[in-house]
Length: 124
Image 1 (tube, one colour):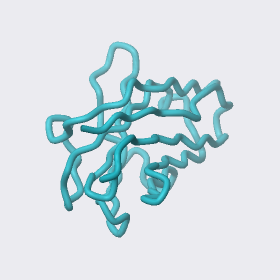
Image 2: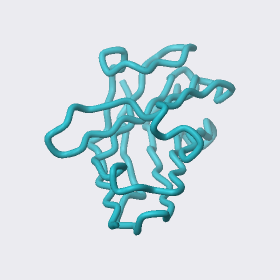
Image 3: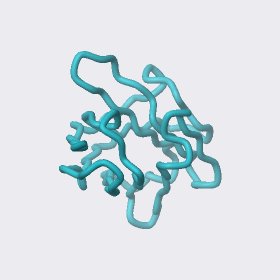
Image 4: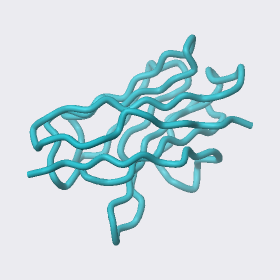
């Protein structure tokens, strides 16, 4: 089992940047595929980005492609989400998620472990 803790959220102006981090417990982080999801008020949780266990493969939702970058440091048990050119519509609670897999996963039901979420607020 793994525990996930997000950090790095906050308030930023439109066009600005934030980097989210997700720290995982345990000694088998490099066996987990990782993903970022988000949920805005009144909306369903949606996929943002995912990365495979080695970091060699990534996948992005169309609405963040070219602006967000997911990466991981297996030595630090951490996955990151660099968010640039933020828009008001990016404002949401962001969640990291993990599942034991060598593949990239993009669906909510494919993930077994979730962080508590962290707020990202983008002012216009």
